[in-house]
Length: 84
Image (cartoon, rainbow, N blue to C red; front, side, top):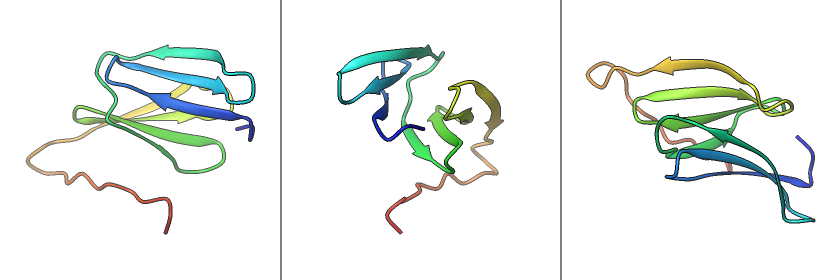
């Protein structure tokens, strides 16, 4: 992902890719549920958390790669801290 880009998410079910220098929205991805959190996991991937699902995305092409469904009775949701 370019250093001049920012990824935002919202309860309006959209992920947006912005050029922070020009304030231009470059791409909007519409999901089916409000997005609770976005986390960069590698230079080429980020994840979004929606309801009981984690979606994995390519952070270069912004294409959807995979969904991991969580079982509320089996899985534990962990909040990541990228500052560590």
